[in-house]
Image (cartoon, rainbow, N blue to C red):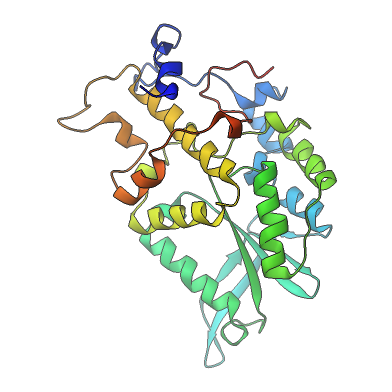
Length: 295
């Protein structure tokens, strides 16, 4: 029995199942840990990496970004023979940095589940990267952020130091900026109280990814392998989720349908990535399904 299983095997006496799904309810509500009254208020004032991305980018790059809603987003048309084709591609966040046109895309769950969405992503990347194929005749440099990611210090270093140096030729990371950002988007200056990367309560789990989505996810994990904490945190969140899904559901839900496969797919490459025990050294952030006193 792994240490993870030993730590969690007695939870059944402490936890309550959801009355509809029989899945154990999460232990924590993140907004309460960081002293915000409601999830709605947290999303509005802070928002984590998804809703706070604009503030995050402007602090690290020290420049104004355009985006945040459909009216403000930059729109780029594909052109062929001098004519615009169909609807424009919308860019989540855009700014001109050091004479470079920079786009940040926040990839939600559909970017891992829909083959047509993944195809559109590929077309969008091709068009924005080639000045001859877009109506602005510019080369855009694109950064993509997965919906399961949060701004731990390691991910901030990967994004604003390593990836920025690779794509823009300059490091934009420093600890002072990082502290300012986490206060803005998490309402804390304690790195141990950052919401953990991973998937904690959503139904949009890796089990719902198609083959291309699994490939995209595994590539993203490989891209960040310099920082092992990211992989450990993502996997730990999924293991906690599996534990809560199976806690009150010991038998298959239908024939040979295993409850854990609501969370992770049967894909061999994914399981090769997933089947290890996360190191507690890397788990210094908040997991809503973990029995731990974060105060």
